[in-house]
Length: 199
Image 1 (cartoon, one colour):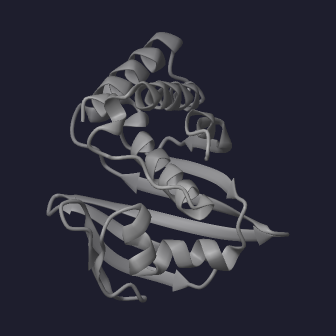
Image 2: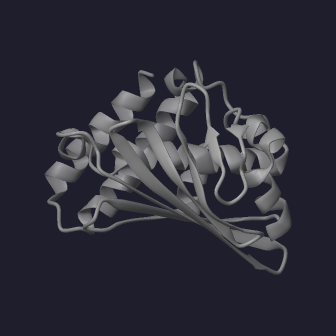
């Protein structure tokens, strides 16, 4: 079984001045296996959410109760890009790149969107970054053959709160890298962890 809290340190995080968050981590699986887990609808449903639609380039997809979008680019097994929309007024872009080396694969995810007014100021990059951390965690568990945690109850467990606190702190560190002062970054991390723990 994977040490879930320990997975926080497996991810590298960065934020830039355009509101883009970047996450990168290595998986102990060949690139074809990671590609299949990220693009096969049955595999995606096993570790993330059910997906409907056409996942080829130019196709449209939706994750019922979550996001929808269009496939902008799909280049097996090196990466893909999609639009990521929650409602008509909110559009983002998600780019995923895979690089295989030996028996492992490095996945790099970049997400750019314009957050609702006040969201960035209140939560910082963790507002969206924590969600993508949880996505990469789900993929890690799936590739290791471990079941994903229960999304309804796990955030309120001791393990869930510890993970969310540590990942919030990791995003605070990335936020400081943009020149934000320590107090602002720390407060944003605490609010982010509390938000996700209460879900």
